Length: 120
Image (cartoon, rainbow, N blue to C red; front, top):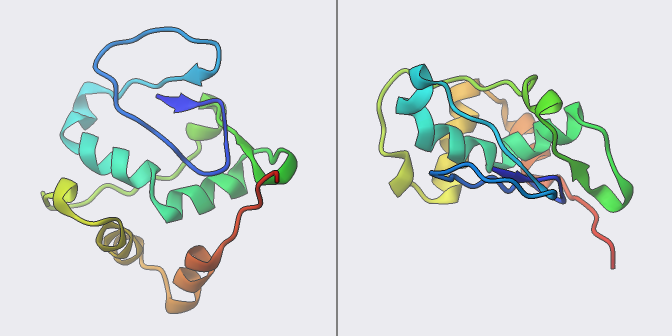
């Protein structure tokens, strides 16, 4: 599940479906259930927030609108080995993702230093 509007990616896992007018959802296909923790962590990573800001429609003050139409185009490279992604710190997971997708030092610096404005 994810909020319809947000400054950064803020995805959560839910066991049951429910409806609210300010929240959206997506269901993981059975063939990807083994990657649930990885995908959840990836969608909340600095890289995924950076990419989403590039593929979605910007709103005022740096906010993004989160819709399935944009999420369907979100690239996700799945890991080739099973790793305990849940026990990784956010920084360790971000480093893992940067290595997985082959980012250069300059590209990592762009992602790490990206600033998103916020209404004051």
